[in-house]
Length: 262
Length: 375
Image (cartoon, rainbow over all chains, first blue to last red; front, side, top):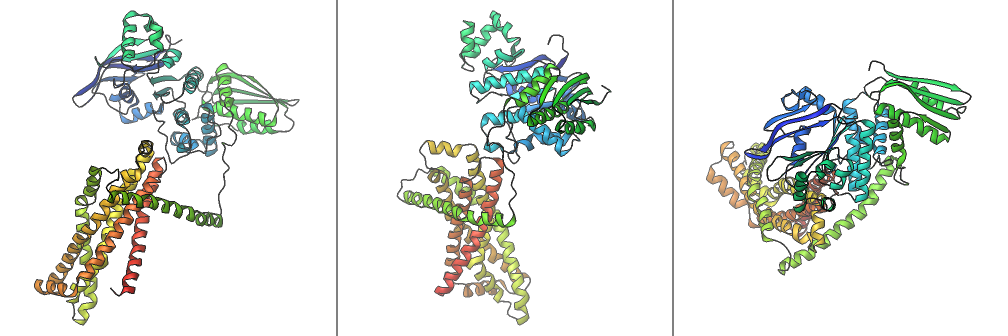
């Protein structure tokens, strides 16, 4: 399915850094519509920074980020705003607005970007919360719920406008294995039903092998992409299996892949 | 893509067919049939609902929310429901109902009336007061341990706190008190020049600043500047669980975080008050010599003869107490802060308000005591 789908995100020869410090260079990859793509690698390799560049929060020093045929960083502010309208973001901590209830958090993008009535927005917000397993928690404040629930509420907010692209930063970090598995199932369900494309930063290898169509493996040493493609095929390839093993020996991920590679 | 939201409704022998089609987008206008469909589902004659699709082009949450409303209504009425929809829609509807609303999770919306609200606030006063006394009960032994040299307080934290409420506060304290001295002199001059005794402006400014106004001005400036920063800092530490981390290590947050700040303010507010007094008297001196034609020596001599040491000592007592009040209010509200960004904001505002109220109450108490003692 994904091979026939059009390219939704194309990154060409990207260089990202802070001043004279180059964090990553020669970053090029493509993501097809409807794919679940993981950006992975050891701690400090620039996964979250790359995601920020894709989300429009940090400008690259060189290169292009194309959404369809439009170069995000070369576009004017109206075009950027239009592209952003079709994206949803789940931040690592959930980043919910603490002064608003969960329903208000989800409703805000709808109030901002649609002409729906208050009643319709309330219904939609409740629906999004129900889809993420938070039915009945509409009137709770972020400080009153657990970390896992905050993540799910963040996902509900990210889904508010039915985005075609979802950026998730460490969605299963801090979650227990069962909740993490449920989140994986939810993401698969949302991909299959809403036809959304997911860009996920994570180093949870269990999740990667469970739901990823593609991984982009960033390397700390070379500061570029060391391997990209279907994780199951990469595991079979001796060259990339080695790089994954290297990733494991630095203690950046679980031991499941180490067992599988052996 | 051109066809808008379409709904066909057929009701026959108690069976309601709802057929959705066309393009369902959040930006599209919602047809009246949506309301009609929901009304028909609630109608007593409807005993069965069938959801179907016909020529459905594209859809998003706008269709999903409509279908979920229909499903919820059929569930409420406990009537039969049949779904002949595409797989994606069926799965999303199932997902929306997969996790049932947890028992007790939903909140009752209750707007208290004026009297109920007032009564609640009054009843809340006693526990709040007790909590503050408990905090004071933690601070007092911590101070005792400090004087015995057994407190777990880092000296660099104390010097950092000293720096924040001394050198960094000098410009704002200097400017406000210089201007306050000027204002006091101007206000006094209006009356005193009518009797030709404008020389008493020196006494008015000198006694006023030394005895109470210098300390009050420093207190107000420091509650806005330092008290607020204490509350915000400790509140943010509370949000980041830094205070919990200290507690789990067996380190008393009161000794480690509060003590250096209380000591710094108690020490520095009196010293800043001396500086503020000098600046205020200089403000009065400027008005006296420039506007009221009093010679510089005459003004200084008048100030020295009318002001005595007891005024300065009383001013320093005020200042010491204000330092304690500001530090207590800032630290108490920071330490009792909730776990959200909003709570930090509230803690900061409340700390400043309570500091200023505390300063005024303390001023009244000391003034009454001085009056009774005839000092």
